[in-house]
Image 1: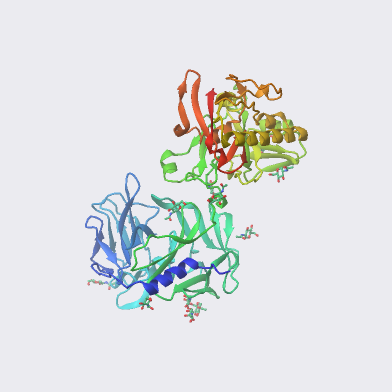
Image 2: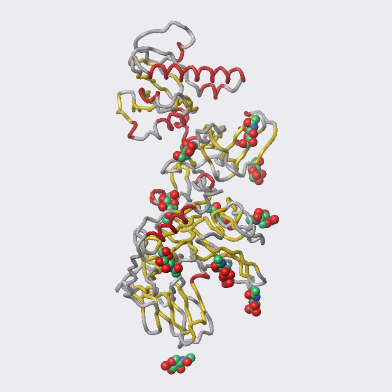
Length: 582
Ligand SMILES: *[C@@H]1O[C@H](CO)[C@@H](O)[C@H](O)[C@H]1NC(C)=O
Ligand SMILES: *[C@@H]1O[C@H](CO)[C@@H](O)[C@H](O)[C@H]1NC(C)=O
Ligand SMILES: *[C@@H]1O[C@H](CO)[C@@H](O)[C@H](O)[C@H]1NC(C)=O
Ligand SMILES: *[C@@H]1O[C@H](CO)[C@@H](O)[C@H](O)[C@H]1NC(C)=O
Ligand SMILES: *[C@@H]1O[C@H](CO)[C@@H](O)[C@H](O)[C@H]1NC(C)=O
Ligand SMILES: *[C@@H]1O[C@H](CO)[C@@H](O)[C@H](O)[C@H]1NC(C)=O
Ligand SMILES: *[C@@H]1O[C@H](CO)[C@@H](O)[C@H](O)[C@H]1NC(C)=O
Ligand SMILES: *[C@@H]1O[C@H](CO)[C@@H](O)[C@H](O)[C@H]1NC(C)=O
Ligand SMILES: *[C@@H]1O[C@H](CO)[C@@H](O)[C@H](O)[C@H]1NC(C)=O
Ligand SMILES: *[C@@H]1O[C@H](CO)[C@@H](O)[C@H](O)[C@H]1NC(C)=O
Ligand SMILES: *[C@@H]1O[C@H](CO)[C@@H](O)[C@H](O)[C@H]1NC(C)=O
């Protein structure tokens, strides 16, 4: 396979071709000694000798929180290491880094006696320690009279980024395992749910875990040259990679032959591990060389409890009806770990309250951690869930009944790509029953606007015939009424504005003109999907009979939650206008 590490190779070629225009101006010290102090107010920094790396204070979040970190001079926004990720400072005028009387590095604020962060070592030669930022990005506390004696190094305590030289692995001497833990979101460096580490069971593979326990991706074992699922990581013209395992430690390390090429591994707060590479002297945007897992859909529980993952959108998570995002602010920062919360609590335990009910969500990949029961009728499956207050959802098909307790994790929409989805029934409070009248029995006025001539009409006819045949197939299979209900029947009119009347499809008497019918036609999901979750962009206005949305039919004919791909490009010409009457 010829594409291994193509992008680093291209960068390497660039490296050969481009003029070297280094700008290694050194205007800050690379060390901090006793008696000196790095203060936030003076925007002090420590700069590595090459000038590539800098250490200093940075702010994140609103209201802003203060952290001490290391970044690359070229990409100041990308923080490579954070000292106090769990314990932020808040007073910019007094935040400072010092070497304390006992020789340790301490992070202080005026009001605080206890340091916000410290290297916390015993028995240091207290008068002779100094801190230095080395050229590889490692921040060390060392003996100033013997620079090779290193007491502490940031490479032993990586946050979410691993630079060449970090030995990500297991230290058999009982030190902490070195792992990468994602930030919570782009504004919050505190430890998120995703982590990357060497298999604790002793094999030579790396794993991605959710909540430090649920493995959702593995690199495959080291075969002497590369990891099975990670062909990019191997020794080649650019990187020298090796897997070291001896009586003291087990780790993977790699180095770059030409020090002008910079690289790093990074675990994104979206749960993906990525490698970046860039040239220290060429101004190019930072792009990942590779990303694993490649699709966000393979990240475990990305959308949090009760969150729904939908493919291929810039906003991949959504909440089911009756739920709202855990936090608006975090959702805006693409942090969905909090998932979705019920708008109204379940009343199951309350005997006087109205019974909970189940909202049907169609075309889903079912969540994990279900309990399966064999051969049970749909009704019994529903009852089994209804009768136990800890049951939050059920699903039923011919092979059995599945029941979920507690939070639903990894709820995903089946993608359009033909992948079969299933219906899941989600328990909701009776107070949310208004959704069911809206959701399951939409009263819709459906107006199909078709150009009188042209390809649009032909396409529509084709689309409708597909819908018909699907309906017949379903009927023949004797599916439950609900799934047939999801399908829409058309009466095709050649009028420019025809109102479609499903009751008339079976008689051949094609009536002309407008017909105004109200019918439970679409499932909530299909309408929601077709109107992009009722976005205002698709809303045409609001009449006396309620809001009117426009469904744009591109390449797809959306019928009752089923999308039919037909004659690509031809279907652009017409729209369906739907009027929703709650
Ligand atoms: C790295 O590559 C550049 C461009 O080819 C070259 O000028 C430079 O000498 C190389 N540096 C090292 C350390 O090999
Ligand atoms: C550190 O230096 C101070 C003043 O130079 C001296 O008084 C003190 O004894 C020294 N401490 C140690 C442990 O050497
Ligand atoms: C480690 O071993 C335990 C027990 O056999 C197993 O449950 C777990 O999945 C293993 N972890 C990995 C990453 O293979
Ligand atoms: C993560 O696991 C811990 C127990 O190890 C549990 O208490 C916590 O609720 C879990 N977090 C999430 C978001 O599920
Ligand atoms: C790769 O690294 C190993 C260990 O440092 C070294 O022995 C080997 O010579 C390096 N390979 C090359 C091609 O530089
Ligand atoms: C393991 O640690 C011991 C004690 O520090 C040291 O003597 C030995 O050389 C180490 N072994 C390797 C392979 O590094
Ligand atoms: C990996 O680490 C070992 C031990 O520090 C070192 O000898 C070796 O050169 C490193 N290999 C690479 C490829 O950097
Ligand atoms: C993390 O992933 C998100 C979403 O894929 C992306 O927008 C963001 O740029 C990534 N963060 C970094 C630092 O690359
Ligand atoms: C409901 O389910 C929980 C968890 O499985 C179980 O402990 C409990 O006994 C069940 N309650 C009833 C009434 O079946
Ligand atoms: C029923 O659902 C389970 C779980 O998703 C699935 O594995 C099975 O194939 C389904 N059976 C049928 C007949 O669809
Ligand atoms: C997502 O986007 C990719 C690339 O544009 C495409 O190949 C894939 O089919 C899309 N998946 C879905 C479910 O739309």
